[in-house]
View (cartoon, rainbow, N blue to C red):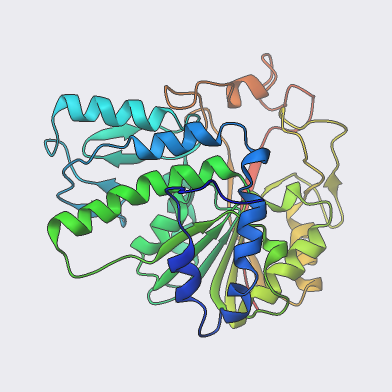
Length: 339
């Protein structure tokens, strides 16, 4: 099983860059793991995604702002014809779920207002300046780019969904164009890899901050997931965990029969007290909940960039406090703890 021959995505520079140092034990197995994840026979649409990246036009990118959002270039940098061609190329990677992104004035209006989640999280975590950061289940890397905008020295995202990888490298293409065109003597070290957390070495203990957002309720064993996170973060480092929750006390969990809000593979939605207990049992210290939010129709919705069903289709039409299956509607909480 191999990555498509002459694929526009190349991980060799990244692997080489971590071959010496605290991530070297990971670098040894990465080529094999990436090849398995990106095997063309697993992803029938991969030729379309490859073509999407190859068809991306070169456009002017006069600015880069990852602190206040993901803004690459600005309105007026490119002609209407160039922007239309850019939109057609990026639309080949539909659906776009996490964002938004702005490229030379083009607004990629994603399903999720992921910037709202970031705004809720950032006041409660340790500064990321000069940190080595891992984002587990990072999707298309939107939050990875925001982490870089907070000054992280290096950000690595991992996600096994290959279309997300192509979306990230479409965006990174224009970040690279910005640095090339402006000749700014700087760079951002952000990479997204098509691997799972389970493939990382045991007891790596390398990262200053590890994020896991929207992952743990998809795991059969929440404890194993938390144990893995603990094994990845440095002593004294920080873990940021975001998850669906239910109201209730210690030990309470919702274990859906079938789907939850039309999502498959949701194994357990815990109460706040249950999450805190899990974290403490897995050696985390100073465990606390820092944010609770009810997902709204403004934060998650269909758009031209994600034309499938979204939150309004997942909830009971007569009672928005319930999912279509009759479970409590989505509430999300953010937890922070130290290793």
